[in-house]
Image (cartoon, rainbow, N blue to C red; front, top):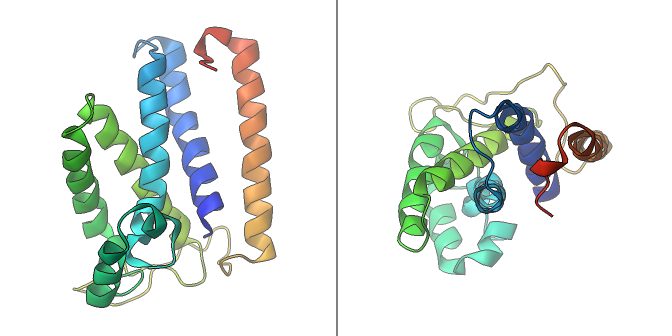
Length: 182
């Protein structure tokens, strides 16, 4: 998937999970927490592509990091499987917790974005190696049908998610405007 599709799908999926929790009052609403969550969710949604030197995340972080990871593991290797989901969010949460409070929010956000990225790559034609290092078989979810990265099918998915996001924001306005922080 392209970076914009990873980001919008992570935002929409997180909202579908967390907005009902906020509306129910199980977690008190705090705009700072929401902004922190969204920031690190977006970071987490692009983090798995740290193994690709030309990716967006590789332009944010020092370039030697992605070059090194790509040289050792290749693209869609270690960072695109169950082990990456378990390890990478912990590493980056630790690094960010040195500078930010609310490390639990940072962890949940990075973990969510990272997981949604991997799920997104599961529906692409290239798929992922779910158990890289132990099993080199490619995994794909075929319920949407696999598609090529950047294909017209991905454009349709991105457009649908963007429209859905707009409808979701309008619904929040109607249901409970106190949840909007902008």
